[in-house]
Length: 125
Image 1 (tube, rainbow, N blue to C red):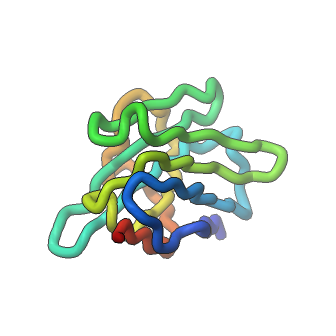
Image 2: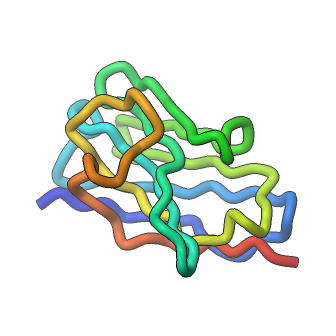
C-alpha cells in the first residue's frame, strides 16, 4: 500500500526557515506527482505546491511563491518543501499527497489520492 510520511515540522520564529520532508514508500516518484498542502484551524485545506512525476515541473500558489521551494530526491524517494521567511499565517498542519495526474497548476485536493498524516508547523515569537 502506498504510504507517505511527513517530517520536519516544529516551532519557528517569524522570518525563520524550516524544511519539510515527505518520504514515500511502496511507489516511486517516477509515476506520481507529489503535492504539499496545509490546513489551518477552521480553514479549508489549501494546495501550496507540486512537483511532477515525469518532468519535475513545479507550481506554487501565490501566497508561498518566492518563499517556498519544492524539490525531490528520486533516489531517496523523498520530496522536500523548503520554507523561508515564515510568517505567523503559515501556521498550519502540512500534508503531502500523491496524484497520478501531472503537476500543471496549484494542487487541488480532489485529484490527490494518497495522503500522509501531516506535520505541525507553528510560526510564533
